[in-house]
Image 1 (spheres, rainbow, N blue to C red):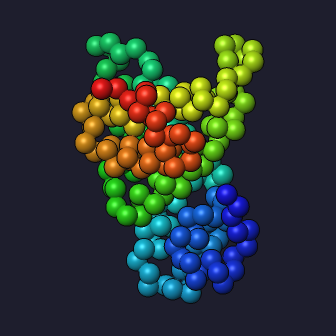
Image 2: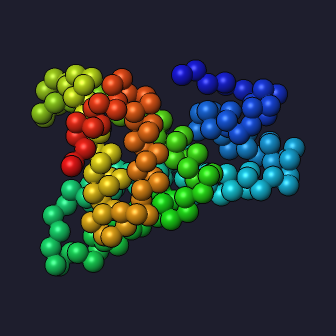
Length: 194
């Protein structure tokens, strides 16, 4: 998808949809400009709060939390590390905003899912086969991503009793996967447990 590269009248005419379509480095300046024009917009204040929670300079904390959840969810759990394991999963889910699933957070999850899905689909390391020798095809890459989505949005939260709290986040990520991956619904269903 080609996104508008400048802050122009059309961005503000199509607010907030155009805001969510902007690349990461253009979103904060566009939001600040919109807030100057419309200082009483409560939605913009919430959008700014979410952006500040998501980005630390250039670092996408949602993507960082996503990757850390993947690592943590794959670690073996014993009675010695159970408490720290649960604490780490809860902290990363919190950074993803699962405890505040309002309409603004949901829109941010949609924007995050698009970025994450495109990054993974285009990543040579994600597409790499065993020990980096060769690469897997599009279908296997899509299946690998579907499995990761289930691990992070369903299994990790369920492992610490936060399945219900994570459902809105899981739903958004799954919907974006189905929207952007060819045959996404069929592929997701093929890896969905039960």
